[in-house]
Image (cartoon, rainbow, N blue to C red; front, side, top):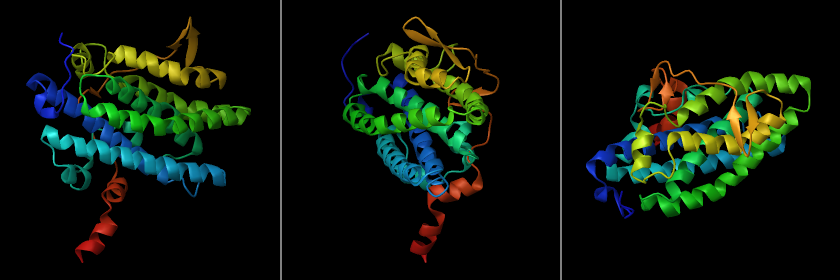
Length: 276
């Protein structure tokens, strides 16, 4: 395998262009919708400081999404159409983001687990052969360190009580399994192809292992029973169910974000005022 970099989307071999475009679209969509979910808790967070953190994280995620949507122009997509014209079943997003988080522990599951999964994927691309991602991923990951610290801190805080641990367990279990799947199935995936060609530094299994390193200590310390030490690594005690897995959209099941979410992320109310 050559180690020469790809300076632009136009330099990519055809066999890599569509798979990389698919991964970038999944990252952009998840970032955008994750920002929406954070924003919905600016006024409902348990403390003023947590609400301010949700506001900051929402702005980060929206900014990250816009960066990646802009990159997709080189892959044959129209960024404006991606942001404003699609229906829910066209989004390449985790099923965890289809509807608003119903509780603060569910927000934390998105914060600690899904947000970190996206960061691990970006880290795998930061030193890969697709050069336009190098600087963009570095800047993005610098901002993401705060998100991880926030998720770890609040998970530890809620886990101090029996009721808190119970609520975290209920929220984290489905999110945990979803995030294990997010990196790709073990039977030959888009991620394997990009890894083999050095576009992503790490196979789906390797990225999943790195994600466990990032989130495992906090989840284990919280006593949620989802992960256990494995030498200098971490092992999940849960095996993901791959039934109805859609490797292209990186989600289980059909459908997508609900109508209210779509109206929010498209900015329908603001756009209506501009059109008037």
